[in-house]
Structures are given as C-alpha cells and as structure tokens.
Image (tube, rainbow, N blue to C red):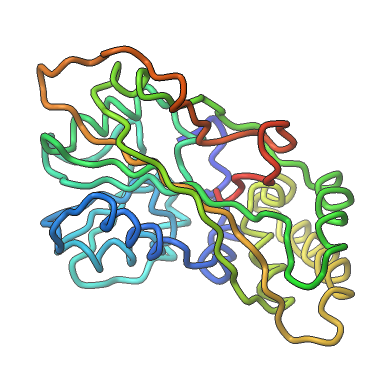
Length: 291
C-alpha cells in the first residue's frame, strides 16, 4: 500500500496489536448518526485493517466484515471472530468482487495508498450509493496536566524520530466527483486515552516514526524502547497512568451511481486535507501518525 510497507515488521505488528488505542467505535458511531443508515449493514469492508481493531469495531454495525491488509505480519495478529474474514491484499487491488459492500472504512490508510487507484477500486467494490469513510487519527502531543510534555515531544522526540514522508493529497468534493464520489460531510474531534508508561512507549513503537529506525532488527527495537522508557519516565513518576489526547477526523464520501455527473463545480470552501505533513503551518497537530 506504499513504496515501503513499514508494517511488514513482526515487531511493529506485535506493538500495534498490544498498545494501539481503540478509537474506531466512536468514529463509526458518529458515521451512523450522520448517515442515518439502518444497522446492521449486510457486509462492510475494512481496507488496511491491520491487526483487526477497526474490523472488530465494524462488526458491531454489520453482519459480515471483510478485512484486507497487505501485511502478513499484521494479519497474523488478528483474532478470529464470527462474521469477520481477513484477506491479504491492498487498497489498490482489493480481493473482492464488484458491487459487494455497502460501506468501506479506510482507517489511517489513505496517506499510504496511490489515492487515485484506491478510489477507483473502492468505487468498484461498493454498491450503488455505498459509503466510504476516510478516517485518520493522530497523537496531538498533549498529555493532560503535563503542559511541558508537548514541548519535549515536538522538540527532542521528533528530532530523534521524525515522521516519514507520506502522501498529502488535498481531498475536495470536485476531486472526489472525478472518481465517482460525492463528499457528504466531515467531522473532527479529540479523544482522551489513559495509558501507562509501558503502554505509551509500546504505542510509540508501533508508529512509523520508530518503525523506520528498527524494522525487523530486534536489537534496534530494544534500544529504541529503552530510550523511550527512559525519556518518558519523568512524566510518570508519581502516577501509574496519564491521559493522552488523540485527534480524529472522518470524511464521508458516497458513491455516485454509474452514469451520474462526476463533476458539478468544486466548492473551494469545502477543501480539506486528510493528511498533512508534520509541522504544517495549516495545522497544529502532529500526524496523522497512526499508520
């Protein structure tokens, strides 16, 4: 799903399964309220499903879910569950028949794919009037009650472990229509998650900032973990867990019926950026870094 699939690393996949925050249920709840769809849906697609966190959230609103990911290491970390089928594949070549799904979720994956090919494939596998949720989440650099943490994170941490390059296509309604979709809405919010020192360090080890440095090298993984635990320890001295803040955004795209107008004029007021590079002047957040 990208030129370099960071998530082929078993070390990264294990950290992902162990420590990633579960943010998908709220995203899907918001979508159901927004769309007014009757649940359960018959069958949904989770593209870039990773270790299955998002897939497990989807099965709560669908009778069946197909999870697709290009990483064998990530798929090995999934937990079997009734109604869920996992398949090896990519967003640019989805292993599913045309017109099957009423909903597709792309969770923290849009910035890794060839976006034009991806949208063509999603358009192919969705039913007429089906929905695509482009979901992104990121660590905001905020730790509740520890104001100095953000300066350390944006300074020392990101100098040592910068965010790897990724796609940063600006998604507009006009561009979506060129690929057979209409942008129906977007939502952005924050969620707090309580994490121990160990879990927060393990979470950071599941992000591409760190994965890019160790890959499959166990010694480098251990070195990165030791540095993280040592650097983070002062922020956990007198408390077993800290509340850290994640940002989240969902953009709702609906498949246009075959033969419908693909472009009716672009509304510049609806321009949004699904993914911005770290340090963008247009956004104060750090990320998205979730995949």
